Length: 453
Image 1 (cartoon, one colour):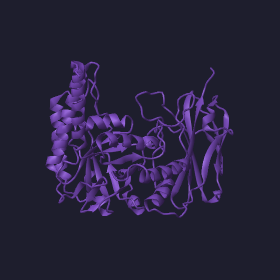
Image 2 (cartoon, rainbow, N blue to C red; image 1 turned 180 degrees about the vertical axis):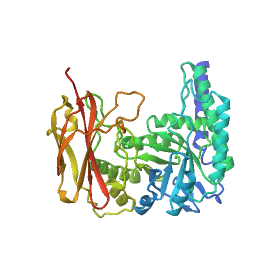
Image 3 (spheres, rainbow, N blue to C red; image 1 turned 135 degrees about the horizontal axis):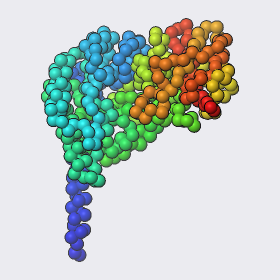
Image 4 (cartoon, one colour; image 1 turned 90 degrees about the vertical axis):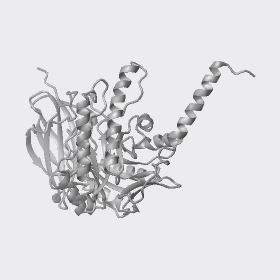
């Protein structure tokens, strides 16, 4: 039986693919690990282990840079620092509370026809990384180096092949040089990069091909955690098991919720967020390949203004979000019930956020909180109204934190009366409920003022 030229070509391609796949599956297993390192990844018959100071280490912690004492008090063992500002102070404080630290090394994300073209800038970047690593590599709190957050790691482009792939090569060349610098200067701590869950499989394939010297990856995932197991299984099927940890997780992000008719995201209440935190942590522990997953970091340990000032913030001034109660229970594997503050939702004129509240200027409105089985005399409630800037395409903040407006006329326990603002546009009304134990609960409703004139 004769085999045609085309069939021979296809057979050759298939053989090369199989050989390449075999090599990719064995990238991690072929690395020789010095087990005298402070931190290293150990291959076992069941998967991978993260070893710190001679013992397996499972990450239970948060991403942020403040309130480290409170993190340790509820059973957290790791903090992820997003930048190098006050790094020495943060490392020392983490060591004080026996917290391990994952240090982010910020580098520009990949953009076509943009970053990494200037070789002088690339050299400066690499030199700065070398100095940084040498300065902090011996700190006892250091766990790992994270090179870049959601870098949009590039794939091979078939359209505009030459130009786009030259840009990709500039990025990967600089990125791989940075990885090599960190590994050469610090043999004691692994190097990784944090991937956004969106297109995870595609990103991971390209990392395995073009940046195989990375020790592991991490994954930022929120509502997408429900599909993460499937993506991990696909990667395992193609490449074999691989080491990773979940570097950001939490309740639904603003890109995952319902929106009003004018484009404002509807934020879950803190009680709803606590429910999502509980179910998703159990999914991480039980379903998402525990043989290879080194743990997880909740987002955000501190106060962060992103879309709203409450969406991700687990702290508000000196108060802790009631979500932290749930985290402490989960990290300590406790079955004792955690009683939340009892704030269920808010209504304005008996309508909720999904009712698309559109008002005229200078109208009197009545906001009311629904509280569940709680003595409101022990709760302090405050109210705020902010204008939103959702129409700015380049902005990740919906609220302008500089422009709180005061249109409230009266307050009565769980009720507030306010006048709608005069200026047309989108707004959001917030309520905060503070208890005597130092916790707070939140809810808010977006509304729109439409001036017929």
